[in-house]
Image (cartoon, rainbow, N blue to C red):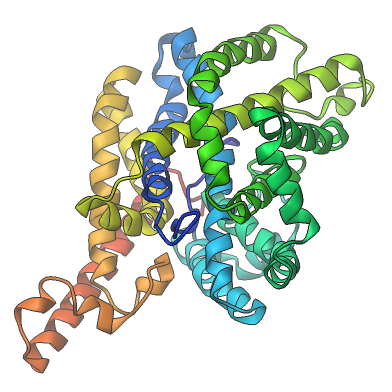
Length: 439
């Protein structure tokens, strides 16, 4: 009994972006986090409904956008996660940090796996598949929440380094990060991380294709998380450098995407996906090494491009930003429970892909935001979807702010829990009826 999920699914859940290189909060990281999630909804809705095209022939323009986006959207989110972790660790010791990660990542992971995705129907099998390092996209019981699992594992793996760097702020990793930012007027910042990513991929890609954060993708995204953490250790220098490179990155990254796309689709099969040893090919060759270097450089340059223009245009506070930023966690967890019913609706009405995407995107956005509004007001369910605080936080929100009467507030709490509970049951039933969860 596993959720039905295509192999290139991905979630969006980096930590909230905290302060910037000094004491000023970097609002661009918060905005990027929100924007990337918005793109995630479009991406998943679009990819899962390719069958709506006549004869399932996807137009080249759509395929180009989807393929290129898939190379950097996850990488950028892990990069933001590493940055958020860097700030979170400044105020915590190792034990406190890991305990918080277990609550913020582990609790929603278990809740979604066992309740939202039906793992309680086969608890022993679900537990086993949770513990298997790489169960495969068809067997993983946590579906799109693999991001949470990976991020939790990365947090545990990197915690000793975080503690070491905090105790030794002039240590080797920090000096290396500063040198990478400063050397060659930005050339080292482009080349060094890309070569590190390529080295990892060269030695891991031949043996198995990448699957939603598994196999060669596991160390790949681990490195992006690490790079995000180290970027913050340079203070404001990392952001200043990439912002200065923004036009150069714009001019060079888009042609690089066209080269990457043409090689992916016209070159040898599996070159970008990995796992070519299973096809009887040599694990290492000039072709596979060159293709891997191109792929990692392409992903890294897109991340630099996004963060560069984000630093330039998005480092601005907004009244809506804090609300949207808080919404990312629960809406990420719930978005497939809205996406699959829409796919069912699109099929019933015989919509084209373009119509389904145009109407379905606002439908899913509205649905997940409605889920957030409910969970936000449901004191004892908030931690299950990654929201901080409990009753005291809820009572700062309407309609609780309209009364000081204890009896009325108790009635409001009971009402919000009942409404949210019913909504969860309806969504879980729909997940089964539409084929998202297989029972």
